[in-house]
Length: 143
Image 1 (cartoon, rainbow, N blue to C red):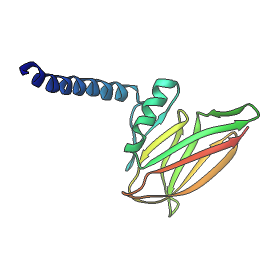
Image 2: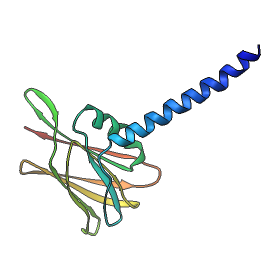
Image 3: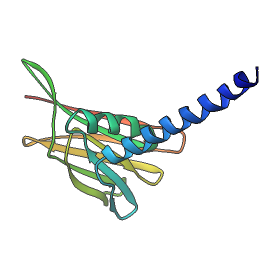
Image 4: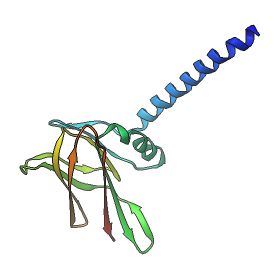
């Protein structure tokens, strides 16, 4: 019976080690964090491992943007999307080019207009960032 009492702590320790290695591996697969003013963001999602790492990190960011195109053959993820996020006074707080189909951003609480441009076509969304909400916006262009 003495050995049985040692099994539970051993499995707990092994599970903790496995989880820690997974967490560090997922962080290594994320694109680099970037900063503009008060905004912290990352963009990417090219390839399965980076896309999976970004999807796992989404819940840490109040704003998630996703970019896709829809054509006769179905939907595809898009990259190199011009993105501008402005406060409700029209002042740009973020101007960037999304390096992949996802852009995750931490913004101060407030209301913003998000504008994304692909293939000469612009789409905008008004979003509200608050501590109690996670905003996910899909930008889908016809191709």
